[in-house]
Image (cartoon, rainbow, N blue to C red; front, side, top):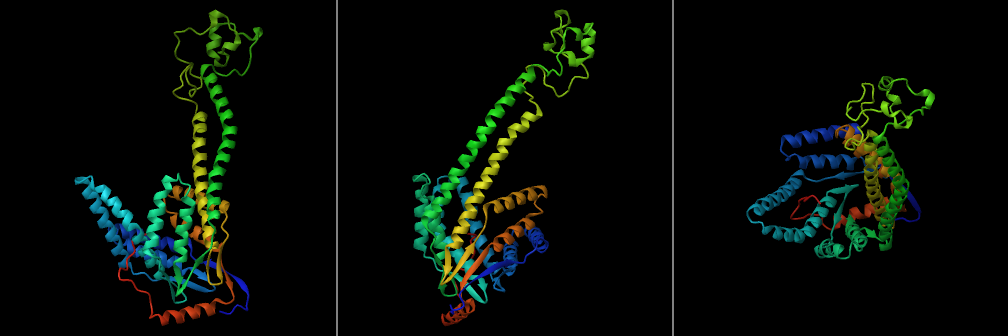
Length: 413
């Protein structure tokens, strides 16, 4: 590798369009339904090939080389295990515990095999990626450390996430060269500490503002339930001349008008005049609050859902930036500059668009996310990457060609 050229930033680019992907997506769904899910393996390959082939780095595109039959084989294995679990539990309930233990034992192996399958079927400039993580380390992280999370009340979770990401990155390879990972553990803890503190502050501020206003509105609503609002205050000169005048003018029917006792509404009169507001609740009836009150009660739910979305986006975005920026291969380092507010706006508008379109805008949403992510991801190359890639091609040839695996399946992890 020639380092004399200095460092330069190579920006990832994405060329996919919503129109092109929609055609692939709708056909995939239709054929998967018609074949009772069998075609879903081919659908996955078509989708990944479209996204990979439309992703470019330094004017060269990626490629996905997986065989759909290998994916179908993996899904048939998973389906058979799930079917055996459902049937067995119906007749032998205690066997459920044995399936849970089996799952915990098999989980690390499934993750390793799936990572090997996906990396080995991804290539750039005719050089394949690879994954050589050990099963022993996978068991330690995905079983050993994960079990400690509830016993530490979640305090160990950021460390577990860091070890998980480090395992995935540091055991990945481009050709014969390993990636490296140097993100600090404290950086993961800062993400989760901020994610825990910020919502509390926001909720406290909103509660301080909303609770008094909400209570005030409730009190006003109760008072309005008992008597209609008076638009005017009548004096002695404005009193009607007869009781009939009162019933013909509902706006005059208010206790504040100090009407003579003989002109008060009789207790046995239940029906209101025809021109009385129809949506006004009867006196003392709290079973049907005003529509404004129902809307006010919905606002906290919407705010909480938005906060949950913001919290998830914050953790995902910050973690993604940390992992990508902490990954490098030789002297070439990856860079990610995703912004939380942009990702939040992106996901929020995508959710609204998908709901309004009844799911038809899912391809559009996926393309938007992919385009934004790649526009904020780059490779900081130290010198020319051409020499590095040429060297990897020679190293792969020296090892005897392509990487192979006796159990070549994708188990969906």
